[in-house]
Length: 347
Image 1 (cartoon, rainbow, N blue to C red):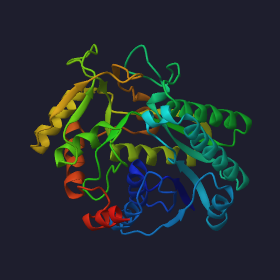
Image 2: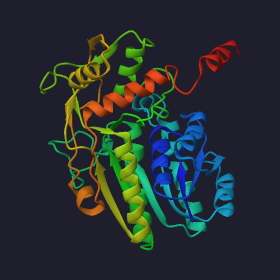
Image 3: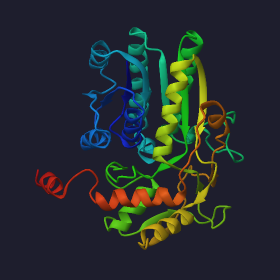
């Protein structure tokens, strides 16, 4: 029996694959490398000393996806695959809706055909929109402020309808807060295409000299220093949340939602300060205008995950910063080597 991991070569996917293999699970990875690199797959093997099957498949291609199910005995699916840049989703909303929602529909149709009814879905705290208070718990009203978040919200509703239509399904929605950090080895980490959309890779790329300064979007929020406050969670803690969720879907039927966060918020400048202390690198920054749709304070109430999954985040902000810096320092160009990068530029 295997667990299918869609988007398994990506940032959260690759860390989850390492934890799954270390926990003794067999896995099959599907990825189309739209926002990930093949090198991450080699490093999953390097870190775990374990083999697994990989298929380069786009979820929009139903016949290729069916091949994965016909050639393997899939027991459950962890569904990470999807486009995830908030700003880009505002510019090309139709592409986001088509890719994220249709890809999930195709996946669910194929799962249903092969009688695989256990699913863990990678959702997001963006489905809470502009919450009126913190901490944010799972029963808060849902809304979205951008097409990326709305695509996650629509998928959550689709999966809820799927469960209502057939209670043999076992579905867990995991709403992540802000994943940062990297594997403690420094061998896998976050390697975004182009200028990073997320804060930590932006900070580490300034630290390594790839970018000149950090843009801080707004310093007039009602927070400790005027900058936005977020719940940052170490990606390995997040990966372990998926291990707990997989156990839940394998052992019972039902439709459940869990926040994965630390329950503690840090401002942008607090994160910058923590990173400077851990790395010894100065991070020059410039205050610029707020981004539309950004909220002042966002952090999780993760009590439900603790009570029902037995999961809690264990790693603190210093470890998150230290592991992020170790990854960036060891991989200044991400998964590309200097040589590959130069070759790429000549084509």
